[in-house]
Image (cartoon, rainbow, N blue to C red):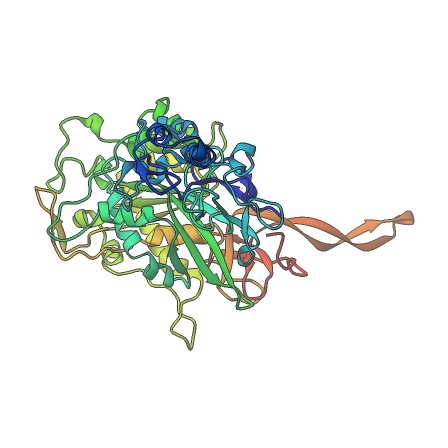
Length: 548
């Protein structure tokens, strides 16, 4: 069966046998042309003039092969690729640091469509009569093609058939979750992402997962945005610039001890995009927000009016430069919902740079950002459970909510009006002992705190891990998947019916009940109310697997 793939750039859906490929062979036109006797020439015409009729057939064959090789000439403009990047200033952020020669760079290579009859002339037909090469160890997924011309190499550089942007190796083989990271102006999103990705493998281990880089863009991002003592902080993402998606494969062990993999795609989106809900940039970035399974929103504390202008932050001469979180939330909501409905996917509301506002924080919050996130260990092992430690975070969630409400009631009101599933986090990407100097260089010991917490919570919300938030009312374990969307199950309920002569009779009927949790220990489904922190069982028990 064909494997369904959703492009992480244009979000068009297609089967794996519809992918296109970038050629591994490039004809740069710089090579010499060898005549029938091996003599080298600079051009076809020079070679043709050097041989008589007796070599006519051999020369004709060389000319044919030379013209066929022009199929692999580098392209100056790829129509599909160009149409995508036109929305983002006509400047691609795809980087090929390996090939110094522009003509050999990946984005300028010939894109081959294996279903195109003209393109098939350049491909090796497989034994099954197809031009596609499949990998039996990857669910028979289409992974490559083999070229007839040039170096006769096998190429596995897949691209989307609609926008010609690159598809990472094995992308589409596993379920995909999309997450948008939006930084309101000045929130330090780039520093946050750099610090997080530097430690993602360790952070994933805190909840029993293994994180594996899937794209070279992650390495490139880290090289371009280093956070190091004595070095200037990375510059913010330019308005209107689309950064390459940051893609990881996340591995976990299932209950039957087999390995499962989920692909996580993270989008780096500048908050300036949402300054004006009607701006073209909003329309260009809207698909990434709409398709996201969750949003992480970073707020700079100087955006709170009660903190603006203090000695902790430079006072803005132009108040319009300060983007209000409530305005950004309203604009984001208008983009993703386009209606009066509330946004019900998970939203992590993160206040960044908490290290700079300690005099505004309670002792509880100072302790919170001074200590690292800790998972929950499996007894008798050195490994952690595949859960987000919501039990430990609950008190901090309340404290952060109180802090934001005290400093910015408009933001709290906007959350209440437009969103249903949100949690609060406080983070510091540099740590309490680091200081940003006037020249933007970092002084002191850098030690990020709590930056992984919002993303780990997001992983629990998209179903990758569980949460110890809810206690199962059946087996009383705190190891359940809490869904951000409820679903219905059917249970048997005894009702009393009246027959003739007013004789009552009890009958069992199936009724629908609402649940939003499934226990990973006993498999039972139940309803958990986060506000009262109570779990509700159903008489007779919820159906195992409960429809999720």
